[in-house]
Image (tube, rainbow, N blue to C red):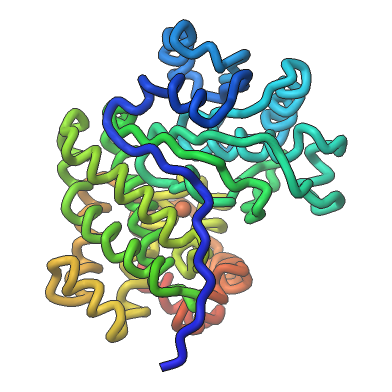
Length: 365
Ligand SMILES: [Fe+2]
């Protein structure tokens, strides 16, 4: 057997219920004294309440929308310069973490946010450290070098070492207020990260192990977290699943379902996790091979078909859209074409051209 890989994971991870309350100590440990905090609007109050215990925070920015705009990252970068901050903390969902990561990367390099977004100016090699504090269990953004940013209607997923956080504080207590539908959508995003990292053409042994455990955890805990948001055991299981899912795809990257999610989000408005889940059970069936069957058995399932049925059942439970007929007037030719040409489709273990994708979507009519 010829086996060769390079594995790296540079993020220091603080995991556990109550870790957020101890953020001040964590900042001290990381040597950060003047941080700009970026947070979801509904978390601002919670963060302000902690300010007394958090002398390391010098300013709070909370003007964050879903599908974050580049202007937000530029505003945070300006705040970093104005306050002479030595770090950035992102507290919230994927949009917030991605804004914090983008802002930290560009704050001290002199270019405009648009120049970096368009690839007209390279991201600098060094930047001030970012501490990520996820408030949902799904994106895995807390441990990846990915930032999803929009400029007007143009949305880009940028994968660059400049976005790698220095530390992640994962506190399951923060996810208890996430409503059931978002819990299901973000949880299935985590499942997609794990499965796609596992079957990606670039998969590798250490990521594989994290993927398997993440899948097992989602199957054990997602339904419970959806049924009862205050169930700390389920929330802890899902926070760990999302973290491991993030680590599972960080190096191998995602594949078919994420490739399809971009056209489904941009043209039909599906939230990211719902867009990934839309084709996830289809790709389980398409990509089923001995490796996937092994993962399924280790997750306590009889086979890949059972995994596909479990995903379909979770989608139904969460009230997610599962048929094209629920998306309005769908241009099947454009959808199949846009999915086929997405760069992530190249990572899918089974080659999927436009015709194959069309056949897949016709079954979801
Ligand atoms: Fe995702």
